[in-house]
Amino acid sequence: MEKKLNLLLADLVVEYHKLQNFHWYVKGKSFFTLHGKLEELYNSVNKSIDEVAENILIIGGKPLGSLKEFLAHSKIKEEEDRYVCGSYILKEVITDFQYFLNLIKELKIEADEKNEYIISGLMDNLMKEFAKILWMLRQSEEEK
Image (cartoon, rainbow, N blue to C red; front, side, top):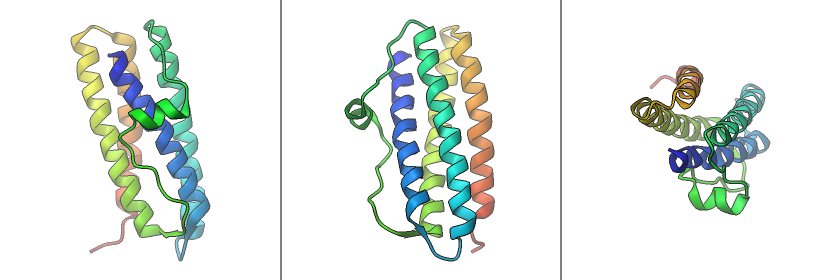
């Protein structure tokens, strides 16, 4: 359980920086909309980072703590420092948040099987939050 929670923690830390990078480098017609929304998202992810790390400690584990460790364990791809358009950002963030939702569901199932009720409750909260954000992001995609 601790290993998978640390994977989630590492992924969240990398996603936080990726969202911040997008916030700085968004360009185009959707700048004003996305610039503010990306700040909301990285602040939300930052809150999740703290919750996951504290819950690892609560169950007697040891959360990863260095950028080197986060990058070594994360499955989220870092973003380069370059200007990007809103449609690219939405595609990337939707992909990442779908990955998070799947990982959180796996952790929820594992927590329930191991009677880790604290972790199960945290996963319920994260699942609801990430599902809502994912729904809103998908609603923001341009119609095809």
